[in-house]
Image (cartoon, rainbow, N blue to C red; front, side):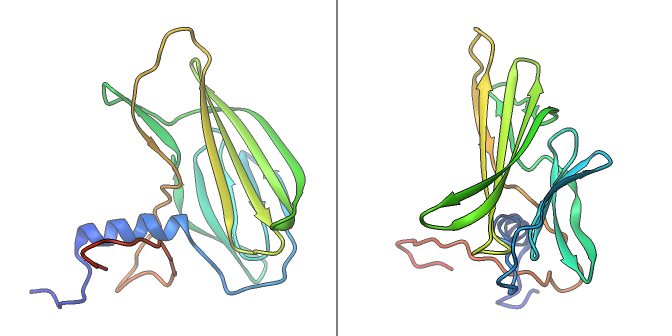
Length: 186
């Protein structure tokens, strides 16, 4: 029998997903270090977190530790769509990449990596923005464009579905995913 506060298998899976969408770090004051392509991978990082993409626009989170980057899991399709007939469209071929500096009144200076991929007539665009003022927090924006004249019926659209591995009694990661429920469940 499980303890009252022990997470169930399904709750643990949900926590893995949520931790991936709001992974954070206690480091502060580190300027963005930029994006680079090492072999087939493209990385946008600051001193606290990095997002690494492969040529299929699959991604994973990496954390820098004393000059070494520790990958949190394997490459996976963290942004994808599912059609009405249950086909998952997730293997986009990288067609374009662009790195640009950004500055806005709210968050200040940062860097934005834009990746565009193609899968048949469907185009996927992923923008990742890291602001110097908020190290360890990546803002991700994904969009899709159907370049065909034929309609594409979608059943689901999934964003930021990074799964972090849980070892032993749990993962040493924090996550905040705020919600308010009338019945006040946790």
